[in-house]
Image 1 (cartoon, rainbow, N blue to C red):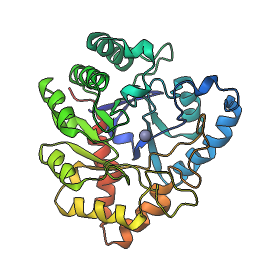
Image 2: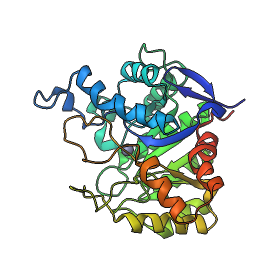
Image 3: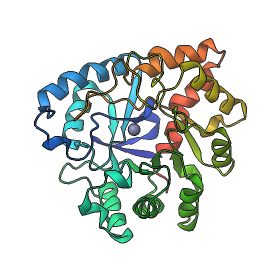
Length: 317
Ligand SMILES: [Zn+2]
């Protein structure tokens, strides 16, 4: 039976339920934990996060995949208590949001060292939490072109994925050819990679989505809810209808099996105010009704929220 690593143990992929595949329990830039103006104690983080996860559960949400990288506020002991308290499965990641969020200690490491770190966190555990990482996070640094460090992290992630069978999620799908070349050189099938944030207001590019999907890769429409209609929209926002139409066109091209959706929400922002009015529950409160309103069938919604994530997250032998 196929399995997935969650922070409270390894579970059958069939038990994941409805999955939010790219989310954050608490995301901040490296060093924000040292900023006394912003630092939040555990109690405050709980207060902000538990109601969102409880609601997620009430809506029928089963699994929350936290893709907060190693230096961006990942806190696995905290995730374990949240999961136990709310009944939501939480999958933690190993890896980095991008080369530009890897602190110098990691940025100086070789491909071999990074591979060893990722494999250890997937097969043995993250520090002494006893929790194993269920996904590997990588990303493209600001600027839109993969840096030498980004490529080193991608290569280590590819090797760790080949070794352990755990999939990779990317922050940004830009400079995709460079990423694909690394994955191909390492012998990693592209259906083990979710190219993320294909739908945001800055990086949407439909020809690229089709190119990646044509090669077998998965496409993350995973910034749902960051829309220009928000009270104070972020720079990557996009009109709600425009994103939805982009997504529906992708499905119409026959790529349902390679589509994944999420909200990229931040339950408890660290070191910044976050984006007001946006939570993981956008998936249930807005996205699902929008899909139904557009005539999308229930079986398609089930594929997007259950079958596709289960297939992607299941550890491959
Ligand atoms: Zn994210």
